[in-house]
Image 1 (cartoon, rainbow, N blue to C red):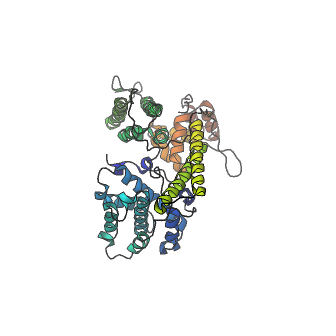
Image 2: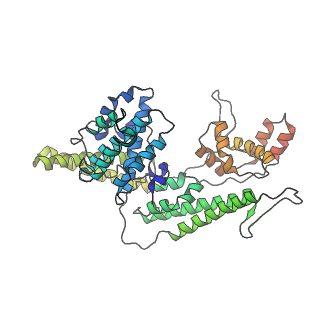
Length: 449
């Protein structure tokens, strides 16, 4: 599988704060990288904090890709990784410098993660070094930041946790991605589910993906009045309009894609009798408490590994160090137990109808009401039954909401009678348009997945 073609959000979850990388913790590689990054001329540009954050996120993304492809000769794909970062950064300023800083940081992070496999004598290190000092950057002033950062001495830092570059939690991806992505990237999703040790988690992941795609199928057929069993569309009686065969073929294509995705998930459904498990490289936090516990566990594991490495190098140990290591081990065991208890809880979150207010506190249109308005306009101009999913970006742009939240609210809430009456009332001065709004058919509230 070519992981570069998988959406970055599937592979790596962006961190929104430099502190999320632990840049403030002394004796860590990210702290040393932060120190030397701040010494570069690039950090004198406006928005330097955001630039630094981009560098860290890019570096961690590249490290995750390399570890995913560890057995498929990633040293031969360095140019692909570089091109991917350049593509991600194409609309930003300081593209070359950010890309080269990101690749230098990735080299140092990997070397700290596994010196033997990714250190300065490795093929990965040498391939990154060559790619970032040749081609378009041969004799370029931009290479100064790469060469300066790559010279960082990293040996006397805490080692990185073995989960540092774990791909993004696949259960979180399934629950938050669009149904379209669940169909297109079914192969990657099933592959990552296969790495989960807990059979119940794997079954839950596949069941959730299947249920969401079935919901998508049902809504696609309802919105477009398509009968897949008879492969026909319902048109209004005595409708003089000419059939849109291109539109019909598109709907059939969308439906067929969903059928193929469902078949793939069912074909790769987790087997209930398994004695051997693959290594679990996916962390699946379910609550803020778990995230805090996992972060503490990673920090304690790093401290423990650091202490053990010092003991091996010095070939000696004193009572204080031994006691400290035992205490750290006990803390890790206790935190892991706490994590397990939290993961076993069933937390029911009651759905609360959405409300929206202006800065002055005046109630205004919610995403659902704005969706109803745009849906009615689309019905009059492009209808009669536009696809709600295609209206999401329009609603998002007008209301200033994120597309994912608009898409979720549209699917979750639909149009209820109160929304229809409220929106029609706002347009009472336009009686004909208000009448069209009132013609919309209420839809029952869909349960939250």
